[in-house]
Length: 190
Image (tube, rainbow, N blue to C red; front, side, top):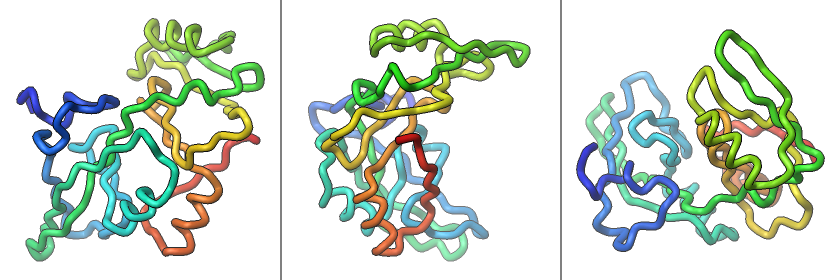
C-alpha cells in the first residue's frame, strides 16, 4: 500500500494517531483453518491474532504492543471475523546475552562465517551491512537471553526472517491453558 497512513509504513513504530492507520483486510483460503495466530503475507511482520489471543496479550506485560483492528474474511462461506494485527514498536536487542550467543553472517553461494558481536551497536552494524534479505543476513545460531526479563513478549528485529518474537514461559502456559491454536514454539537456550 502506498498510502502514507498504511500499516506497512508503521512497522516497529508507534503512529501519532493509531485509529487513522489503514490496515489490510486478509482473506482466509477455503481449505485453511481459522486459528488464534495466522500467518498472513499482507500483514508482513505483524501478527494476525484472534480476540482470545489479543485478550491474553493484553493481560500480560507488553508495553510496546499496538493492536490494530481488522477483519478476517473466510472465503469458504464469506463470513467476517474480528481479528487484530499486532505491531511491536520496541526493539529488545538489549535482552540478548551477547557474550554467550553465537552470531553467523550468511552470504551468497551458501557461505557462512561466525562473527563477533559484543553489543547492540556491533549487531546493528552487521545487520546494516547484511540486511535480512536472502542470501545475505545475520542469524543468531545460539541465542541466550539475559536473566530477569520482566516483559512477557520481546521482539528481536533485524535478524534472519526479519524478526523473531520470544515469549515468557508464563505467557506460553497461559496460551496453552486457554487452548490457543496456530502457535509453534521453539525452545531457546537458557
